[in-house]
Length: 396
Image (tube, rainbow, N blue to C red; front, side, top):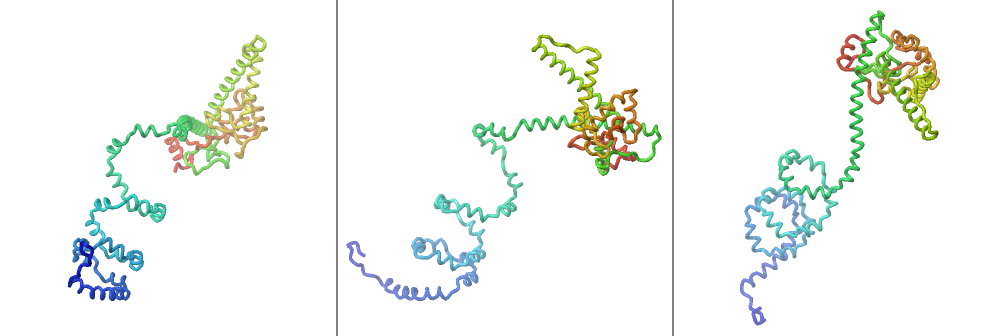
């Protein structure tokens, strides 16, 4: 068209182009229908073709926008095996020739991300394989921790942390109590090991004086585990442990008695205006002895051990290793006064093969080592020395 709107005469080039266009419009669709694009692409060296083409000049001469509008890309993608095409392309060389920064500048990245279904994308990602291919050590080595910390605003980070909730979830009181309890248990076990060592040495010396031969019973069969080298859990106790436990119980029971008397006197003073004081008379002595017997019987009946025995790590059981009954506890208490006559009742434990004192013989009980939920073990050097002489099982 001319500037005034009239038809402009067409030149010779236009006239010659018309037959060519007509032939192309007829042949190209027929050829495309007859050609197997996948097979054709498979026989074509795409890299070689791209190397021979002036892609930049071709791109400048082609109206890509018009080309893309006229092509049904979905149909083309349906007909082309993209996996085979990509397999034949030198993607590394192709990516090296692309200016990624310019490409991203011209792309609407936000729009692209809006169209991506991230959930479906993550579902198709094999995280394990991805992590297997990541050199985590190398990645960490390349991180400059100092620069990372320097760029972090620690004040703002701490302001956003709810320290109250963190403290609640940590349960610091439980952590502190467990740590303190663990330390006290370790110290107590260390003292117990020394006492057990003294027991074993004392009993070994007594056995030599009595010229005993052969292996003595170690403890109730249901409690002794000979496969545990150096362990004394369930074995009969020695005289040092008994003596320390008894002394601790007498002190504890006496302290409780004195406290009870003081509280009773204070209450009596509040109610009647007249208190009473403890004296050394026979009545107070008998009352103290009665309280001591009640203290022992109640402790043995309820827990199978007294407080002093629990501290040293001892427990009273039946001769077969089962828990004692209240009747057996009462029988032991009944035999206690006779045991104090010249201490013969307790000295029996030094010579009796199962280390049982007179109260144990009367009540058909015995006393064994028991440290609760922890194994009763002797000091390492002493265990090794006794094991070499056949006193204990192998320390394995």
